Length: 379
Image 1 (cartoon, rainbow, N blue to C red):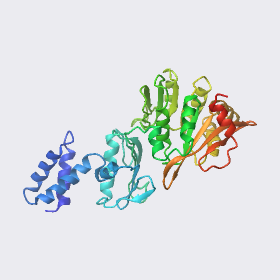
Image 2: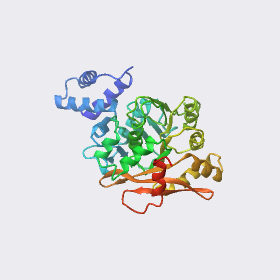
Image 3: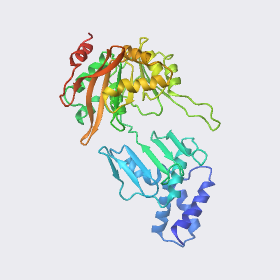
């Protein structure tokens, strides 16, 4: 009797169960179906494979538990990659038997978060119950087989001191950032994908006075600041009828009615930029968020693109940004790890705003150095 055919029968029985059985329950099913015709080693293999399909991320689960892993990527049955902080690398010894196995895992993970993934809804982007972020795409949209992207959210809340010890805060950047928070300056943390924007923002929020109330608006529960008074609001996708969606813009509006001392948007990437800028212009000092940008100088263009798409005129976007934002903290991902690369100042230049460096990790020119220190001195 082959293990694959045995697994097919066990899988069919498990699919009819009302709840996920224990490992002992799976072992009992395997032995029943095997009828004593396979050895103990094959039973253990069948149990391990069946449990992997039912619990966690299946064969990817060991990768997600590795220290330092931030992303696990599956490109069809034949390719599994991971990122441990130094770029993508193949995951040795991890794979799937066939395309069906990858698809089953993707569908099950989506279902565990209450989402549908099938031919009618061939992609999903959702947070799993353990906080891991799932994105999956099914064929034929993904031409090379089912693609799974898992972003690992570490439960440990890093402090600025932790980041300093890890080398993420070169030079005087740590002291400058503490001063930014203490003086309640509105700021954005910017950087590319996987550069550590969320980790740094969480650590900065941990420096906020414990008496202040933080209102976090996020797509998924990614921010984990070490702060005693934090309220988290999360977006919600539409149901199968296409109704009931709650977006970031809705959350920002609700947060403003909840007496926030600091309004935080986990990632500014849509129409919520209009409400965030408006809020920061109406007495909500110290607000902050993250924004995807490859360089700090790109921030005005990114804000303009988001604001104009949301119906705000170009001049209005720049006027709001000039009055609302004061500092941009740019992080980058280098071969030796993630670190703060630049602390910049948002300044008005005619009718537009520009972002100019006030401090740079490489010691390069800082045309806004005096302006940064004046703002940190309360000037």
